[in-house]
Each structure stands twice: as structure tokens, then as C-alpha cells.
Image (cartoon, rainbow, N blue to C red):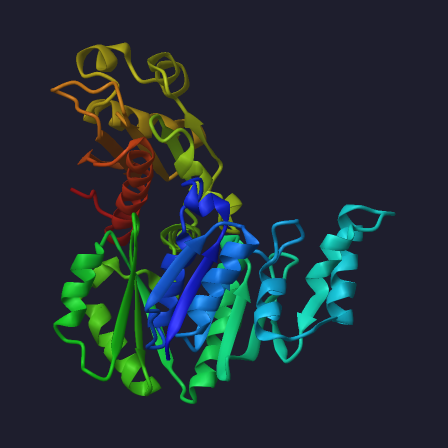
Length: 413
């Protein structure tokens, strides 16, 4: 099937927002054996959107459009599509009722503006795709353009709304449209690069299966797809063995989710002591439900004074080795475990940049420490990237080290 993706939004072209919807679309399409051959990003300008969409509809069977479905003045993609396909719109009573309920819960005793209720308009012959995280429904629109049968799929722009809708509402419709069933197995390999995952899998991947990869700082998610569920499952289970303990348990796709589950299963609690990550790890641990059972708290100790005051890091350590050192990371994690009375602890101290580095301690030098049942491990990292990337990678590596220690229950190297 010839597929194109049209992402709308001024923020995408101004560099204010990373176009993660395009990355997600590509990875998800690959799980059912499809891929787009064209992708465009355009501003919230009606004439430009219309021109881009008209061009894509001349050459593609399916155009996926993101953005422009909300309640504001620049949300115009639905109207533009209906104009190009020459189809009418009508208000869906069930969508109107949902919008009214949503509004009243947040604005008791008032009514929303007309632009808000325009989200209840549905084109003729369109299928509504449910939005579990917002007000704007997605739309699967069948139509004709210059006597060609085409489909336009309209999805919201915010990733929190777009991703679940794409996965749970759009992909099943696309699979049904193709006339054959596709089966997908997925797993997450922690602390594994996309290249490493690909090398392991492509060497043994049979021709009737497809693999797709989605990399992150925590590891790589792998999607294996084929038209025989038993074959896909058998291959997936076999190839997972080659990754060893890096595979997240119980089908988890997120490192922190699995960590919370592992800690809870052992009735362990964990505390955090963060310097250069500034509370990032604590925020990650408390994101999944159930975190309150395993996380009593943490300390952000950016200055040397706070390290001494809050975690009892000695002045001798700071003077002799410095705040960015193996010795300081060890003292920090031991101090935070003692302070909160936890079986596990994490510490991070480093130089995130862009300034502050020296030849002896360059930007990107980070020490992550983990303590588990009285045993301590510290890992020296040399991380590349800008300040945000160093911080994010440091947080991920600290969590990975904790996972390794939980897996072995021994001091990690």
C-alpha cells in the first residue's frame, strides 16, 4: 500500500517540538509490514495544508495526517479534507454529549465555544477513532479523489493522544483494510543499542518475518511481525534467549515499570541521591503506578554543602577527590540509604555541561552509584551529547545498574 504521512504544526518547523509522531508512525507501520514512502511537515496554514494534501492524494492510497483536530482556530485539517474529497459533515450526538460532559466537569455551569463543539463533526462515511486521552476524536475517512479511491486518517497531534490512537484504533483498521491478519510480538532489551539488537536478529531472521526497532537511552524495543502467530511467537522466544538478562520481564516495554515491579516483588524500597540529574530519576521512578510502595523519597544535592548536610558526605572526600568522583558517588548512595532506611539506593554525580569540565574531568564524566542490601557498585561513565542528553543518559544508566544488581543480587562491576 502506498502510504504518506503529513504532520501539521508551526512548532514542528520552528524546532520548538521534536516530531516524535513521525518516528512512532514509522516504527508501528513496520510492525504490520508496511512503511510510508513520503513524509511532509507543514505549518498551520490552510492553503499550504490543502496544497500538500492534494499533492499526496494524487499518488498515495493512504495519507496519515497528524494535528489540526483540536478546538482552536488553527485546527482546520478536517474541513480541508472534506473540501478536497467533496464530502459533507454532520454532528455526531454521542460525540457532542461526550464533549459537553467533559466541559462541564472542568467548567461547571458554563458552555463551551462553538469551536470546541466543532470536534463533534464527523464527515460522511467516516469511522470515528476513539481518543482516550483528549477531546478530539480521530477519523478514518474513505473517499475519492479524481476518481481514485483514497483513505485519509486524521489523528491528533499531541503524542499522548496520538500514540495510543495510532496503535489501538488506526493499526487494526489498516490491517483489516489490507485483507490479511498480521501478528506482532514485542520485547525490550535494556542497555542494548539498536545496532546491537539488529545484528543479533537480522543474522537469524527468516525471510517471512519482519523486524522493526525503536531505540531509547534505556535500550531498544524490538517488534517481530509475520502472518503466522505460532511462527512469530516461536522465533521471538528463541531470539530473546540470545539477549540474556537484558530482556525486560513479563512483557514490559519500559525499564522503570519493570524495576518497580521487581523491587515490589522483593519488598525492597529505593531512595535516590541526585546531583547533575536534579531529581530526574526520582521523577522517573514515581511515574508508574505503585511507586509509592517502593519509593519513600530522595535528595537533590547539587552543591557540595548540600551533599555534606543532607547525605553526610565528608569534607575529606570532597577536598581530596571532588564532588565528581567514585568516592563521592559511593558516599552519596550510602548516605541516602541510611537516611531513608532503604534496601536499595541510587546516586548520580557528574558534569553535564556545557561548561564546568577540565582536562582531568571533562564534560560528560558521570559517576552512578547503586547500593543493594549493603553492597555498593559505582560505574564511571563518559557520556556524549548536550546537557539534556548527558542528564537523560546518566539517569538511564543509573537505573540500568540497579536492574543489573537486582538481577544478580551481587555487586555489579
